[in-house]
Each structure stands twice: as structure tokens, then as C-alpha cells.
Length: 229
Image 1: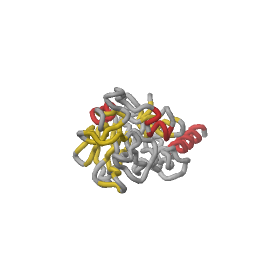
Image 2: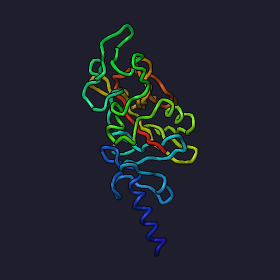
Image 3: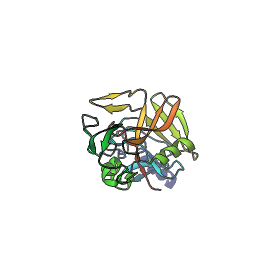
Image 4: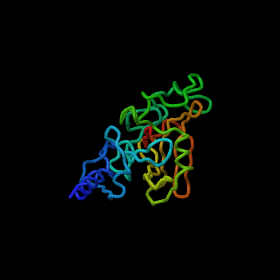
């Protein structure tokens, strides 16, 4: 009887594994998305949000910020901004400082202030899920590429750590001006790392491609949070 009760307790926890509410929080048991007895203990929860230990330097969230499930899109954010908006242009960026010789200039995270990583106040993950969560760094995205096995699933990648645990990263496209482009082609996720004074690093992937690249800070990309181990 004790073994039977333990089994049902595990299954109850497992029911929260694969789905999230609109803020990325773990869903109640019995909602869409289930797990097995074997992987019931693979997922942890921090302030109500689910994460997986892939055997890397940080734990990775199971959903994007604003997503309802691992395979769903969440909210788009410009780099360094913490609110959604309808129009993603250089001029609409909160740190826009006019046009320079090589493109938009910004008033923060430049060679003048030597800030190379987003502060908590400008981190979309921290502001949406709490300060224990944050956006990944450039190095943490590279670690995800180098130390995990990536399996293409038509709508994104299953990413498996050396310990056998997995997360799923869906294709996202980019929000630019008033619409989303290439949502069935590219997966684009902001890091917290600035590049010089005009761009920022992001994870970029598609079928047959995965890399860390640079992009204009004003584009709307998705956010996959991480938390400390």
C-alpha cells in the first residue's frame, strides 16, 4: 500500500512537468502535459517555475517567458527591455540615443559605461519570474551548444544533456516593426551579454544550424531563463 501511495504521489508531481501557465509557471496536476514515473524527479521548481538540470553550469527553464508549454512561443522582448510592445524598431528602444556612423547608438551598455551584461533592472527574465531567474549569458548559450546533443524536431530542437535530461527550444522568428518574421524557420533567444555599443549576443538556430550570433538590440526575441544550481 505504501508503495502504491508513493507511486501516485510521484505521478501527481509528474503531471506538472511539461506544461506552464502564461507566465511560464508549472501548471496544476492534471493539466495538459504529462510525465512518467521515471522522469518525475527530473524537474525542479523555483518560485513556481520549472527547470531542468542538464548537467551544465546553470539550470535551464522548461518554458520561454510567457509560454504555456515547452513547445509554445512566449513573449518577445527587445534586448535590455522588460516589457512587451507592438512595435520593435531602433527608435522605440528605451536606450535609443540617436543614429551613429555605423547604426543606432544607445545610452547604456556601451563602451562609455563598460557594462557588458544586463543589470537585473533590465533583465526580462528577472523582472518576469523574479530575481532568482535571469537571461543566459553568451558563454552559457555556447555551453548549451557544445555540451548537449541537439536533435531536430521540425518545430525546434530537443536539447539533451550528458546526464540524459532534456529541454525543448521551439522556433520563434523575430519581432521587427509590427510583425513576426521567419517564425517557422529560426529560433532566436536573447542572451544577457552586450556586444560593443550597438548589438547584443543571442542564440540562433534552424535546421542544420545552431550558433551564438549578434543582432541589433531593438529586435524582439524570445527569452529562455536560467537559474543557479
